[in-house]
Image (tube, rainbow, N blue to C red; front, side, top):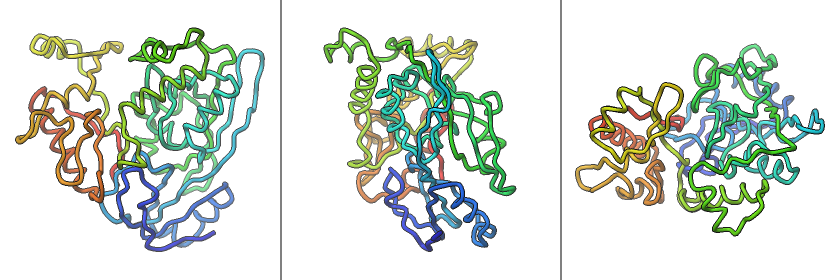
Length: 343
């Protein structure tokens, strides 16, 4: 077990922010994690759990111990003619797990292709895209209680899944380290191509007979066309959640903005945050979309995506997000929530 001091996190976050961790270590199995948690440094310092670094914005030096979870492994723990329950270790790349399922002809997460990060981070915010959410296939997860150093199993109903939310962002925040996630996948997949432009992309690909790989490839192509590659431009994907308003609030907005897109969800109405941001503007530009200030800004193709063009610091990007939130609030009386974790 090696705990490093004053470790640069530049290579461990997709925003490419060069901040330092006072202490840093990588764990590859549960035994190593136990040793780290039992160390004097862990007992004395605040702990920060890092997966793929794709959902975090570093705004200052991390004054504590960063634990990078690199536990790997994929195992089918149960299967019959219809389904397979697969246990993924938390350090596995989410997209790698999706591709593995596609290769095994196991359906259920193909619409979540090309989402960055690790599978251990996926339940924390109940990742979702293109008409699918993690909770749709979730069975259970194993986690280590940081203080008690005891393993606990969280069943689906215990995770309190909501829109980009879970118990691990509320009452259990900072109390557990996720070790593994078990999903139930289908051997007889039901394809969901009605969301967004999936069917249009499949048509452009010349797909006449649906299969998991075709759907996954279509999602990848769509995401690549909309979001910048973090290897080229620092970013964390969608920075903001799509807000929900009541039906009565939406009716007032819709009368004023009749081209406002929306999705009805139970008794609430979800409005795309990207549309709201595009239809607001800073003092010196027509829209936030494509807005640039020195070495950071809003991506030209996706208003949800804040970017670091070169060597911006996290405080600049956080400040930009605050100005966007204020702008949307003033224009629509809607308060955007950040999807990215601020460190």
